[in-house]
Length: 161
Image 1: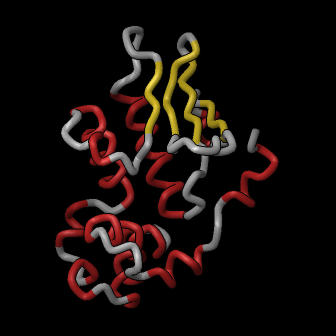
Image 2: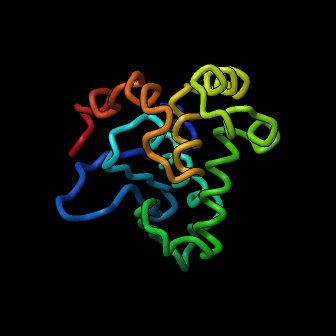
């Protein structure tokens, strides 16, 4: 509803088998559209993918570039200016660098530290857990916080095409 009130259409598509599509940003005329597949059915991934695509809408879509598709796990994206900018914008929107840099959870990997940072940043602890896991490359860290958040697909079940 919030995005719709700001002129952005949000749609959900079921993940296509044997593909790695997480989301896309596109223009239909002047109408921005963000599409998400919820391929990784986790709260941290949902918010990162959504904000990543919104940065593309804000900064990269235009008459010359009407469509951007994203596999957020693709390591070859790194170094591409528009992808780096979208990653940085999403990262900063979720947990600002000024909070992340002084956070204990970066080195302790403790749930209490993750919860403290989440409270300070105003986000769900699963988002902090996702950031720790992404930055370290250790997808086992803070898995309880990810699991406790539960899946996101049930919230959009009636919207998945």
